[in-house]
Image (cartoon, rainbow, N blue to C red; front, side, top):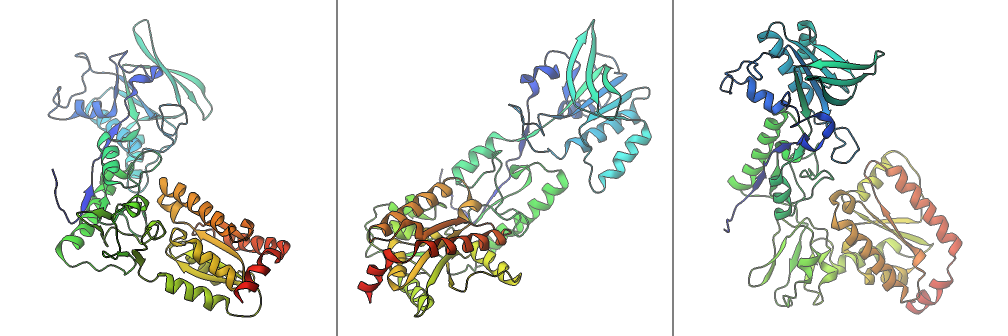
Length: 463
């Protein structure tokens, strides 16, 4: 099925970790062990027991809740992050049981209670109701002579405890659903190491993904509670409506294809990391999807692609204007989104670097071709600093493309006799502007040690 849409929102949710493979929890081995999701169903008014806490036709008198099952751990089958909602769910269920099942004692074995914001009030209420909180990891759930026993280490001083229980409830980790993983692959958006959909700018553009026009909300992008999910869903809906209900304004920072020159070879489409280039009878670029990195330009054998604001003519003009005449110059090509902003931050914080450095903003280092670097050396540059943080921000295959592209630039420039050590690549980080200034200074010192022998013949021929 082929559907044309103006925006996409990924809201594929999550799934709960299945503790069946974790032998130490006793899940599926003992009927007295269940998950918080199963307990929620049991306590629901439309559940199998009409909201009453019954297990095997009996009311459990001792309930033990085990937190962080499969989360905040590094062992196989676990995830390193906090699932965020488990503490609040356990507190809610524990309070409900204490209120509606008189005589039942509830114990929560926790790593850290994380009940931020208004949930702290529920935490205090649970303590006042008599819920017992034990700080410590549960080692195992076993059954001895028909009695379930929970072994836990009380890290606040009471040592190893053996808690008898009629019901054990596991607070399991939140995992990305199969639908989330599949949709991310189909749509080509970036994923986190845990395979949730990755937000590109969680603070500045919440709900945005690595592709324009595709948004994400809820637990499809990570563990969160209902309140957070609703707020993020509202934000995603507003962004989607902006694209669908009115004309869209975008910055003129995208690639253009000259149809008369294009041979439809498809090289550009393979280079594009966002899928903005498509072949619908003829090769075209979707300006909404194009993020303007310029990786497609060097790959075109027909030279049919140009970048608005970063054409060859404009780049050559900037290089010539920066080098001019006089003393030695170090050209720094910095991507406009991260490395160039980091350089601005360095200036705003009064950090000093060599006066020989001349900065040129480019969409990305991927836009540069060997002819640009060769032209800079021919005009008198003693070194070229390539600073780019887009590959790190985008992640995945783009990092490998960046590495191969830099190696290609170095090898091509070496063919005209320039020492490859005169080209330095730095993976920029926006907050780490001090690190970039430090690398610039180290590179400048290295260039002074290299001297000018390999450049003299090249620059004399040019002159």
